[in-house]
Image 1 (cartoon, rainbow, N blue to C red):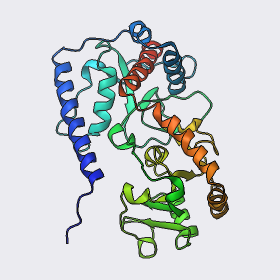
Image 2: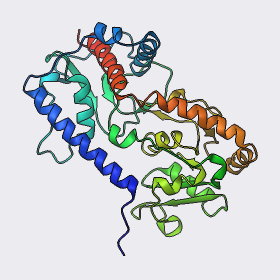
Image 3: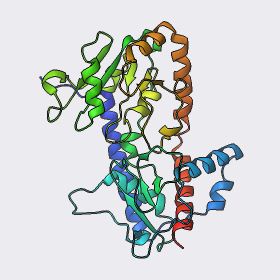
Length: 329
């Protein structure tokens, strides 16, 4: 019997349809020269003072270029030449549209570099990226809200933490990510851990393969493992918007979600890199549900700052504006 399509899957499909329809319309309008431009001063003046401070602080976080950083002549692409890659096999369509929406109002001659996909290294040139290694130092990797249709998915969870299963769930593709396989090897089969990989083309599926589990099913557990893949843990955003608690080692990579600023014990439950203390940490929060609920409340506050799409675009354009000012000299 064919598996029925879940309500959340239908909503996800509708979101993607709206994403592509809206973005293709915006793209062709902009290519026809209908863009209205963007003014940094007006954008900041339109924000309440508290939001203005947040926008400037976050922009400074996303862009931490080293002193003297510039884009050498002949490198990068001009705004006027940033076109949808029709005919190319790997289009990175969602990345393209997200970045196009940010940079399209800027002068046509502004140049920029970018790297699409899962970026887990320091870029050589000042570049717009979805992800970068967590660092407190300067970096050429400038974060942008890219592939948002996949990464920035939030949920409405009506089940209280105390009414969920006293266990942690892990359902992920395991393909070249040794740390995900390490989690399975250590904890798969434990009575408090419902863990499995969902792909059969890498790792040890004969031992760890389990059926795909949708978000609604995973929300039946008090804890959800948020284990990084090629870069950030994609599920962290929806987990932090739910009434379950994210469990993970300290993040090594960060995105527009600012994973590097998340505080262990405040926004998520931190476990050791080898996951050796997992059971101890779970039992503590099962025995002290009020502490878990405090984490959930703080996680919701963190997520709420990313829900205003118009504000997020403003922050992204502030970041792009600083990038163009610093690198196009």
